[in-house]
Length: 389
Image (cartoon, rainbow, N blue to C red; front, side, top):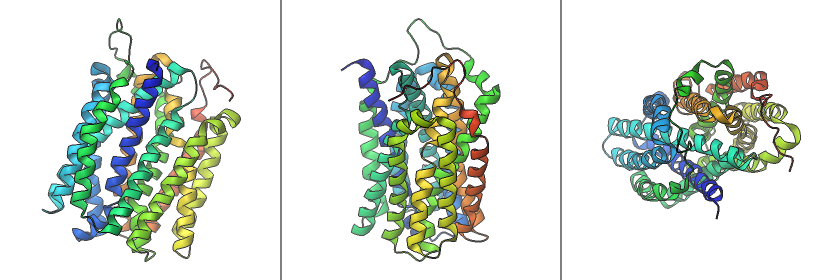
């Protein structure tokens, strides 16, 4: 197998295991809420632990990747993230603060892991000469589906949250560092690290792409963390049905990400992501204002399908210039990851004053903004057009 082929598989593994780890945690949030007897605002505080860790990790991830390479950063971060999940599971038996502390560690690790795998994914995409980033993110979504379905099984079997997260944490800590050894070097051996990482933060287009991806990441994070809670608390669904709603959301996202390269090659980035944003808004509207559990789950399916390509298209837009792909992807991914993790706690605080479903109106507004600025992800004039397939 060629180095590029091995790297493609390694990147798929990084995305899939990242999604599996995160969804394993997200699938048990309703049980964490009940076991710790938390209100919506208190649950928002717990989820904010991940956001705090990510805010610390994000500004450090770019320089670390430039210094040590995405391979070492992802290997280390995945091991740390696994320990964080183990700690979160064990902390539930002790109280809120131990869980928050473990989630801070998890957020730090997941942020570095996320940026590192996106930087490597952009590098591989440029090296093989065709659009593949949506399928890497489909790998992430497949991981989230597996994690969510695993959560359904754990809930149905009555497995304690602490045991579930411990098993997942050990598997991540031991498995992923071996899987990502085939990552490509982030630069040629004769090249030295540059300061482009800091300069990218001052580029107008890069920041606009970051805002565009932020809206989709906010919508994805809100879905991951709150669909199950909203279905159970606001619609009166059984716990297993609430988790199944999350799985339906993630499955729809996965399917659209897998067919994404064909859609993009046929219709172009701007038309596809703008149209999908409208579909996601329609799904969210149905989820928020629908009359029953069935319509809410149907809304969750449209919600997930519509937001599927926003994140990967933003990553590809950041990598349009191969010479500056790594720093720009780092910036875009960092902005997006802040929303992915900081947004859901915000939904919790808003939900405390009305309901979780009504708080999701904020996501509708952000996706409307993303549709308006979708032109910012149009390929650069100097970039080769995506190949027809």
